[in-house]
Amino acid sequence: MKILILGGYGVFGGRLAELLSDIAGLELIICGRSLERAARFCAAYRGKASARPLQSDRAEITETLAAEGPDLVVDASGPFQTYGDDPYGVIRACIASGTDYTDFADAADFVFGVSQFDAEAKAAGVFILSGVSSFPVLTSAVLREMEKTMDITSVEGGIAPSPFAGIGLNVMRAVVGYAGAPVKLLRNGVQTHAIGLAESMRYTIAVPGRLPLRNIRFSLVDVPDLQVIPPEHATLRDIWMGAGPVPEFLHRILNLLAKARATLSLPSLVPLSGLFYRVLNLMRFGEHRGGMFVRARGLKDGKPVEQSWHLLAEGDDGPYIPSMAIEAIVRKLLNGIRPNSGARPATRALELADYDRMFAHRPIYTGFRKTEGEIAPIYRQVLGTAFDRLPPQMQALHGAAQSRKWVGRAEVKRGTSGIAKMIASIIGFPSAAADIPVTVALSSKQGIETWTRTFGKKSFSSVQQPGTGRNDCLMLERFGMITVALALVMEEDRLFFIPRNWSLLGIPLPRFLLPKGGTFETERDGRFCFDVKIAMPGVGLIVAYKGAMEPVPKEA
Image (cartoon, rainbow, N blue to C red; front, side):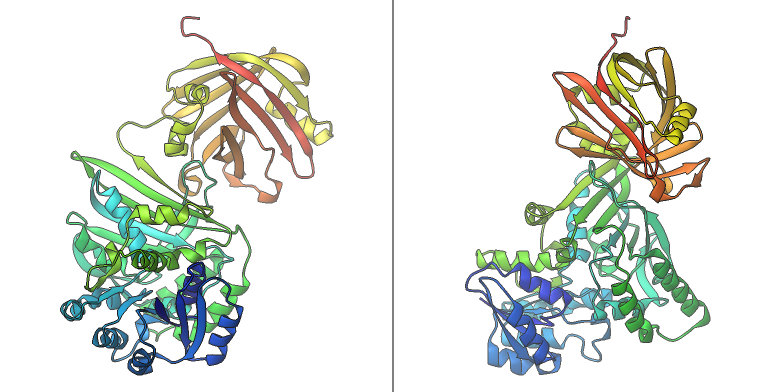
């Protein structure tokens, strides 16, 4: 099989070539305006597939198709928003030559308009799939899965790239190009416009049981989903899609520029794209992780429900996700599974199960969260579906809403520094002991739990509740005036409590002083076990206690 990749040495084309490198006998033609860059890419290419360079561009596509005779053309060049007077020139040439076509188009108008070639493509016996990327292929697959259990009335989604992912210049040109410009979308059931990058929201991407991304600012982007998803869902009345690039201060600068352009009728911000491209690719700090979310609200049996899908990609794997859709199509073609002939947006090119198979061998994790009916106990709210993976005794402790008591024995260690002793004394942590009886009494009221821990004759309390706003999908635990936001992370049969931020009377405290410790819960021999360690940078150990407990029968 021979594949011609326009822009093959660019960000998306290059990653696609990498994803296909294990396929023996596959011939990739790495095509672009610069023969030097194409040759350099091919010289560094490794794998069972072959790659050769070709100097050509969109204006020469007819001659290139005649000379090379590829089985499939992949347009990874872009930006698709600026393809000029004949934006569909490559598509016309592919239909004329009988060549299948896919692209990475992120321009909503371009992708939505490709259906005009449907009859011609069917007559030629070729498929023309546009927008074969995370937006809208993955988002559409997620929404079809959600629609199995609800009538969807509103959709929000967003992608949060890792700060280490890098961004292509053409992508930056596209984003800066629609900043401050009208963006078509569906709002309150009416087709209307909003201003690109001038509307923002915050969201926490949190796969159940995994360490969530930090709460991220997303701003409206002009992606194909805004136009191609509404026709797929009869009950849909609102749709909004955003991107959450970091660092946030640069993101906010772009927001301000977008609002200024819209308010003052300023010219396009495209001349600034080079500056933003260089700065964003230099500002590589923070967590080396990225993510994506889709949130749908609607009705189930006439009652309001909310469902969200979350994706977390660790390390360098996230940037490959946009190229995986075309990878999957190529592998299906090689296995004799061919898309139907015709020209259309690629909303139905893949199902969620196709992505799950591609993610299975990578550090890419996904999961659904649902909100319906009565308010669930705190740990079930925060953990979502991961709660059902907890060992039985942990589910028994954290899954009840009524007051309860657990008893057992524990070992306690205390820090020896003066500051550690002072902090432990203020909070009321127990004194050191090799073996001491422990009782934990839990009471619940309006979704808030009070934990009273008694070691021997000394007691201290904390209050736990689900986080909201910037602490969404975290659990808040308050010790007196100090509140710590904790991520609940599952690793095999252990539940870890990972501090993410903290505050004093609601005032944020420095993260570099945030207490650490590796605290976890588990189950051994049918007993609930705890291993708590609280330490601070520059202070060291404050307190550590571990032990095992069993529930006290209700009649006792």
